[in-house]
Image (cartoon, rainbow, N blue to C red; front, side):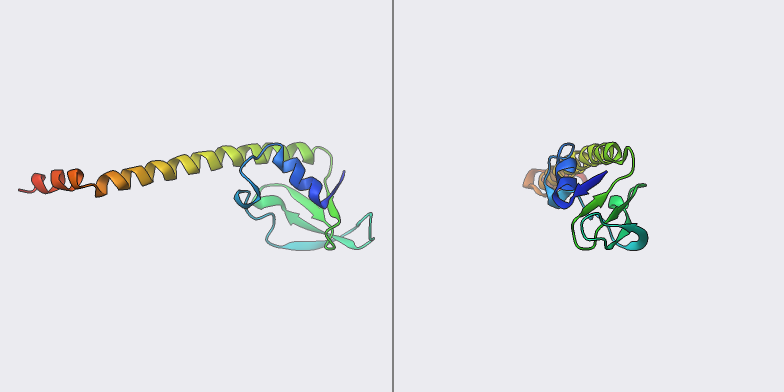
Amino acid sequence: MWLEHQELDQLEDEAFDFGDDAKGTLFLSSTPTTAKCPECNTPLQRFQYRFCDLQMDFCVNQHGYWLDEDEDTRVLTLMKQEEKDYERKVLAEDQWAKTLTRMRSGSFLNKVRNLFH
């Protein structure tokens, strides 16, 4: 399946609702393949999708991405998991911030001081 450049974002957005900045890095490095872009005939590059166990090919001229059979489903599954993980991280950070705020409050510090007197 050939996805135009913006169609991969649209596919991911079906499962991930926190915006592009929260998705993480799409890829870090790539290697050349023998497959060609259907739009410009440039050799495609293979990359590891968002550091997951999924390899995809892309056009260096940003025409799009080649997905093998069922890789669109894998992208959705991976993005759903990423969204769950992101929600958990945000919740943990909020809880930690609240804990730090309570620890810095005068009443908490007074209690700690009283323990040592």
